[in-house]
Length: 66
Image 1 (cartoon, helix red, strand yellow):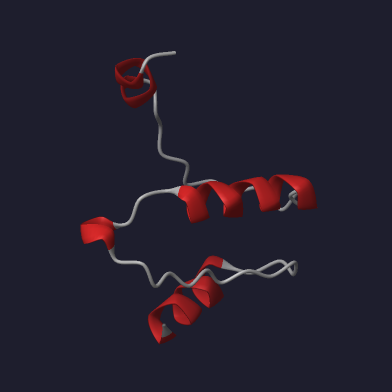
Image 2: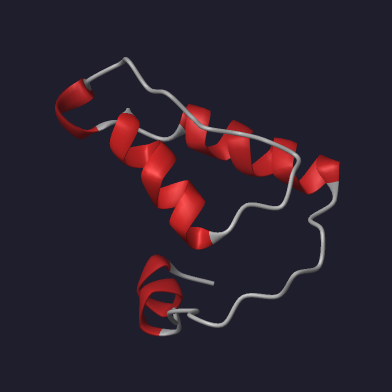
């Protein structure tokens, strides 16, 4: 898949499931974020992470605190 195909086929998800995400997949997502470039090459990145089920509101509150 080319980058253009990837961008044109993306979609927004606004209806989330309560199914737990496998731990291995969480680590893959975190690793991809760690390796991704940062805007203006800013290095300090914090990643809130937990294995409990968080509501969107609780996650928004924790992100605002950063």
